[in-house]
Length: 351
Image (cartoon, rainbow, N blue to C red; front, side):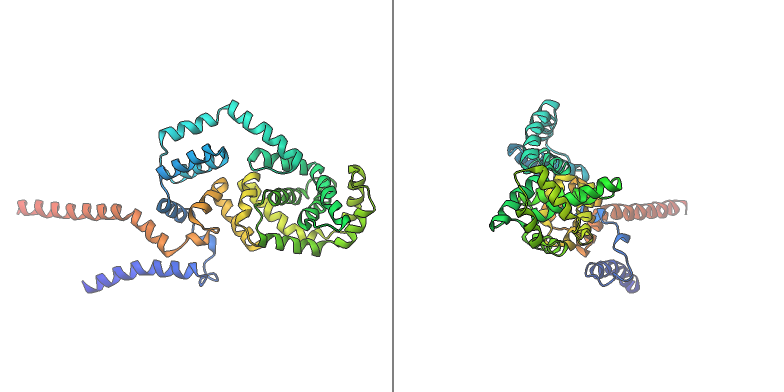
């Protein structure tokens, strides 16, 4: 009996010890991170931190604040963990999804984003990106920030540098039949995120440092002082010639990671997710997480405070997973015990 008890304790302790070692990176050499699926752990933690009434409350608050994207995100999380929403909340969501409501909400915001390059909703972000993808936004930002540089005023190296890289990426996209498109998308998203205030100070420093390594800002200043920045065509020609000397190889890895995040989470959510990125390593982690969760990524981060898949694979979440199966295991043992007693009773009568 003592041996059986020891064996049970060992079998219970072994997976917990394994998860502790895995969480701390002690098994990286032997167990690839992807070998352990993350989604059961994510669901376990979400069920521990939220429920149907909580998500319904969050959705209603988002709708009250005209944050429709947030409301949809929380509804997706409710579906992901299979918890029901309040009937009234579900009805409000369906009403907001009506064609007339979507059209009224989207049109004005898209135009605003296209003209200003700024916004805080999905349509506005899409409008801002559209203007950048047609180089209108790049030339506009070069004229704006370049004028400050030429006058010796404070300017955004990140916006100006990305705009120059954007022109170079557009030229490469046209010349190569599309190979420069991920970099072009990455530029647009980072510029929109910077203007929306979702870029962290740490990531801004990282991107600015890379841009300074990729281009000569002093030479760029000379180029901008020699051109009429009020003339978009002349500005584009002059900066496009200058951009030929930009080292795209230094900038492309970051832009490709941003574009990868955009493919899984969508452009607007990528802009919002940038507030959880403090450095290039964070960007890679969030991008990988988004590959599993898509547009739910930001909601999961907000609810759990975790920005990487490994963070969910903990001993505590293993316990939560085990607890979900406790009643099934108990019921199974009970059934076996009852069956054994029944057989013994039958044998007793026959005897």
